[in-house]
Each structure stands twice: as structure tokens, then as C-alpha cells.
Length: 297
Length: 275
Image (cartoon, rainbow over all chains, first blue to last red; front, side, top):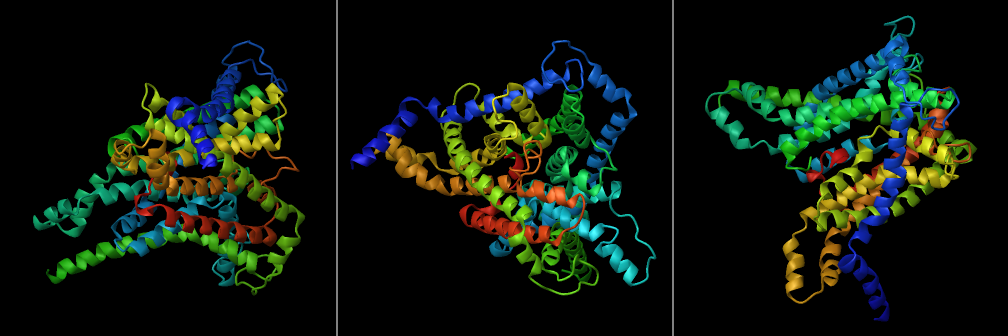
């Protein structure tokens, strides 16, 4: 009894009198270790770039950003990043839509849960492990090349990996679950009555699909593609392993500049560009998500 | 229904099934290959496979590199989960229960580590640790903090969702029957959101366990999480021992997701990343 009372008093302070105490630990953590570090990284990006110097010099300049723009090495990396992410979003949409549709329309609870668990497991499993599987499949001595040579279809291995194709396949594998999850909710929300109405007015199932279901799933399609774009452009591990450092994208340059060259200001500037590109697509994503989900995507 | 119409319905259904099959294949084949590699008897997985053995599983248990990384990640995930669940649940209660100017902003702040590219967050923290020189650079506490930042959004997301779904009238009924705000919360609300809290902590665990991006700048030879150890080995060779470690990670993820499916309704579960 005494014990309960103690606990009560402890919680009462939290819940009745000082509710702000509830959020304080998390808030302090976020201010010190999230807001301040991210802001300092932004500030650093505008400081004079000097190799090996991390301390703030206060000599504000746009030199690092101009360097990204002027040097083809970095500008091309930005272009590669954007184009690979855009391509990945498009292909992921085409591949992900049927599965999302199937899951949304599966009414059997057990089967639905089973499919959801498959998608969630694929999503939550460490990406490095998934890439291990993909690399064993697509490498020069991998299963695909091995099988093709075994059946004498090809004579020497075809390069499926350590090029843009490899990175693209990796990004699709990485982002597919996110696309499927973004689509399921919106497809499930489409009223069967609308589809039936179109059918009763003489539309074929194909017409109903393309003219009714696809336009009604547009918000989910938009949200999913933007989300996949944002996470694909930010991925370090996929281009690092599937591209074998031959396909240079922005996240690889960030790591290289900082960890290998000690160019703190320049590395931060690339990180800022990367962040802003992905933020832009996320802002649009959230606008869309708020409109379709009443605030909760 | 005419025969032509039946065929049309089937055609659409067939297309959906074929498409779903392709999507599931892309999602699952790499995972199967890891399992096969870990269980094959040759030095690496070839086509056709040589045979099945447990030699790489045993090699994993003897391997200094991967076993220690696995245990390191497991411990790190447990600590991260505990701290994130406590911090995150309290914050979620505050955000959902007390409306004040800026509460939406606060919610957005807590979810924002999800939209920040992991490598950018890792870099920002690394710069902060090195420049402030408070002993967090390449340290264990430094890594725990980084993992807390990326896992707390999941806890806050799931707990707030279960608080939203909870019928506030129940708590108000308890209040009108004479319970104090605290008793009403403890006896009525808390038992109802406990599933959400547990699901959130499972997510925190598994996200921390599989975390690569923010760990990249934090890892040292003494503090090497499994994803980083696998990455370093994968850059040079496809070791079946690494695949054996992967098998255990896969088992862990499947277990976690089965637990989650018992705790929350997966059918209402979508857009995890930005909820």
C-alpha cells in the first residue's frame, strides 16, 4: 500500500502538476543532440573550407557550394543521385502497386496478416544482409551468371553489379516495402461501391481499374513515389555495395570527404545539399499525406 | 455474368497475382539466398548448390569478428530500446494529452530524425562530438544517443497512434466516477495503450539492431555493430560466416514482427516511416 502511494506521488508530479516534465527528457536530448548538431553542420558548410580544420573560423563563404556546382565530379554525383532515385521510385511504383492492391483486397485476416508480416520483415531486416543476398545473386561469380554459364547461354559473366544497374536493383529492393505500405491504406479506402457503380454503367474491369481505381489511388501513388525518392537518394549502403564505389552518388562523397580526406566544410556542404533535396520531396510528401490521411499518413 | 466478363475479371486478377509474385520475389529472394549461403556446404554459394551443412553456423559461433558484432548489436539494441521506450512514451503522452501552441511543431520535431538522411544525422552528430570534445566521439554512449534519435520516432509514432485510437470517454467516465486524473490514466488508459508501447519498443529494438547509416561514423574496432561488420567484410568477399550471422538476424526480425502482429492490428498499419 505504502509502495503504491509512493509511486502515485511520483507519477502525480508528472501527470497532474508538471506535465512538462513528461516531455523534458526527450526534448533536452533532441535539442542537444539533434537540433544543435544539425544546425552546426549547416553553419560549418558556409565556413571557409580548409582541409583538416574543424573549428569554426567565421569566414563565411559559398565556396563549398560553388565547388559542388562547378566540379563535374560532384555535380555528376548529384545528377546520378537524383536520376537513380527518380528511376527507382517509378519502377518501385509499377512493381509495388499489384502487391499493395492484393494486400488491400485480401479480406481473409490470417492471409492479410501473413502478407503484412512478409513485407514488414523484408523492410526491417538489416539492409546489409539483404544486399549480401543480392550480391551473391548478381555478382560476376553469382547465381545468375553461374546459371547462365552452366546452361551455356553466355560464355563469360555479364556485369550485373558494380554499375548503375546494380545500384538501381538494390534501391528497388530497399524501397519496395515503403512503397507497398504507402499504397495499401489508400487502396483499401476506395469504396467498392464506386467501382460497382462504374461496372453497372458498363465499364469493363480493365476500364474500372484504369479509370476509377488508379485515379482514386493517386494520392497514395504520389506519396509513395516521393517517399521512395527521399529514402533512395539518402542511401549510402546500396550504392557503396552494389556500385562498388564505381557509381558515385552524394552520400558516398559525404563519407569520403569527411572520413578519408578530413574536408569537414566541404563534406558538410554536400550533406546540406543532400538533406535539402530529400527534405523538399518529404515536404511535398507530407502535404499530400495530410490531405489524404487527415493528418496521419 | 457473361463468359467474356468472367474472363476479364480473371485477367485482371491474374495480372495482380503475377505482379504481386514479382514484388514478393524481389523482397524475399535475397533473404532466401542469405539463408542458403549460410547453410551451404561449399566455400561459397554456387549454381548449382553443392549441399547443405551446418559448418558455417558453427564457424559463426567460433568467429571473433561476427559473433562479437552480433552480441554488440544485441546489447546496443536492448539499451536503446529501453531508453527510447521510456523517453518516447512519456513524450507521446505529453504530445497527445496536452494541447498547447506549438504541440504540432513538437511532434514534428520528434518525428524528424526519420526524414533526415541517416548519413547526414550521423555526420552532424560526429562533427558535434568531435568539435565539442566531450568524450562522445567514437564512444559507446555516443552511439547509444545516435540510436535513440533514430528509434524514438517509432516509439512516439506507435504510442501516439494507440493514444489516438483510445476512446477518451473511457477516461472521462472514470474521472466522473471520482477517479483522480492520475488514477484514471493509470487504471484505464495505460492498460489500453500497453500494446502500443510494447509494439513501439519492438520496433525500436529492431531498427537499432539493423541500423547502418548513423552507426557508420560512430563505429570503432571495439564498438562494431553487426551491420558495420558485415559491410566491411562484404566489401572484399562473400563470407558464408557472414551469411550465418545473417540467418540469426533474420530469425530475430521474424520473431519481432510476429510479436508486433500479436500486439497491434497490422491491417491498420501503413506508412510506418512517417506516421
